[in-house]
Length: 383
Ligand SMILES: [Zn+2]
Image 1: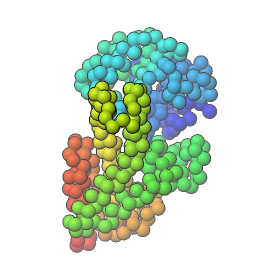
Image 2 (image 1 turned 90 degrees about the vertical axis):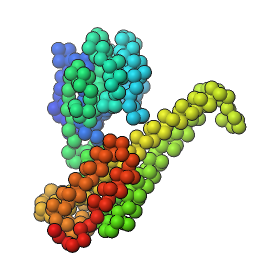
Image 3 (image 1 turned 180 degrees about the vertical axis):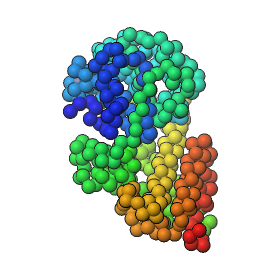
Image 4 (image 1 turned 60 degrees about the horizontal axis):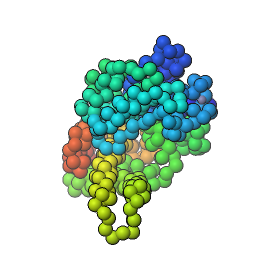
């Protein structure tokens, strides 16, 4: 096995990165990896980091490779944002770190997972560091697309573009790596539209499958205005359930750890002022994180919803392209029977608009309500 095993369906980008590992003339000190969600940007960045540290160029088995991949290598720093943006304070810290020689490894690698979330000031704080290479320091910035990254950063980095991996490649990884039954792996990979993490969750987590199903079934039951409003509320609630399920436990553990660090007594009725202020700062961060997470979850639900209309279009066109929601073929057929192709396209546009509005900070429920009203089934049959 090699460090590149999990970077699937990306032959050309991997070849570029491997060449840089092997040949100093093809190496550069700052890279920008872009690709749609689920294409494996941060996986690729980590694999590249491991290959750079590995004396054998990324064997996947040595101490260097393993410590980079399990995130414990001393010279590989990963900045993963949990808030809505990366602040100037964090950027300055990274810029300072970049000046230091690697302590044990061959390179100091700094990975910024969400370079699209750098604030203008944070980007400014990084510019100098990106402009003046330090001998053994490499920057790996990741973002969904070039356009998402502040232009001054873009121009100082070398761009590598990842694409959405094919369904079959994702399924093969789930089978080889996680031991998932091949048939289930293909269904999950298709349902997740090639998003590796999501596909794994759908293949292994019954409640994730149930939530997805509930979202998709919404499409067929929006007739009147009342249905639309309740479908919007349901979609928000399903997303809320998912966010809560994944953050409650983590928030509590973080709080406990913080209390221990501060030497505070968790059982005490009141905490001393310094503990209180630290706790309230942490709660604020957790709240920001929850907001971002729940927006991401809603967006993913909308991508799911989009997929059933897309399938409807495939059926209407009589195409042999596989359905994303093969498990809901009846539902897809009903949707296709009740709408013209134009109406299905319109529905997809309506969902696209809702995604844009939520991204632009419109309160999600508001955007969802407007969307569901737009998605009401046409009353007079085919138009
Ligand atoms: Zn190795």
